[in-house]
Length: 323
Ligand code: TXA
Ligand code: MG
Image 1 (tube, protein in one colour):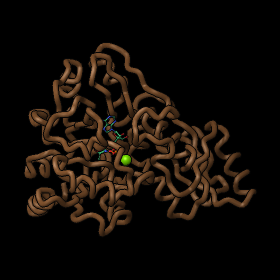
Image 2 (cartoon, helix red, strand yellow):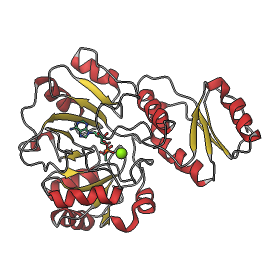
Image 3 (cartoon, rainbow, N blue to C red):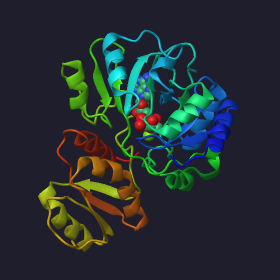
Image 4 (cartoon, protein in one colour):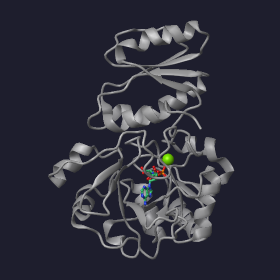
């Protein structure tokens, strides 16, 4: 935790005054505002360039703070909250009266989570309310995993940036629709589906990328400037060479299985063999290849289990049609 106590107080004051605070979480940096204040929440949408129909996640200091933010919490949701909070899990529940409809995009449900980061928890405790916070990036681009990313992308649009160092999980929270007794995963993320299933004792539906079930789940989310092309792991090097011969500035995500010291590319990222490390580094890698001037990134999907499911989801979206 690098933010000083004075910074926490200052940031909580900004939230109380209806301002915007970027803060670290274990997943990615969030762009927070008072979730009960429609004017404050609308500033988030402006700063991000995000359509106002896309619902936000409300961040709370603990499971004991749910009162007023959500309606009835069904048994399975309670079980997951007990086991995984604080942590990278968002539960979609019936909304309570405290949450502004500006934050829910007009839906009768709300996503809530308790982040597992000392700076975030200190901020939320000092503030005392709920902070609506999307990832602190411009709409559709790569989520920030350092305070530097936030400053570079949002600059003056944010009133205060709390620096808590690099995010440890690196991909966003897993979102579970817990409005009924039949739960489903709306977005794979930092809590692996297998861990949720082990606690629930039943299997969970995970939608594929293409159907857009809720606003805010566009296929081209999480995209770097460079176009992303996905191929089989064994085809990455050959595809990179082909694209280079066509005149592209090629960036390569070299899979751990591909033992090639220096494929002929403009820039290379060696994908870590550990999925936890891969998830932690993913958005930084995409930014790095953008910064290196690549216009095309060749990558392959990891095995879709554990954190690999979330990584594959983000890569598929990064490679999705731009709009
Ligand atoms: O890890 C995270 O979840 C990060 C950190 C900052 O907490 N936040 C984040 O927020 O990823 P954002 O706004 O980038 O993504 C929120 C997602 C959107 O895809 C939105 O559609 C979904 O949550 N969402 C929010 N409320 C919802 C609801 N009531 N029903 C269905 N989906 C909802
Ligand atoms: Mg986001």
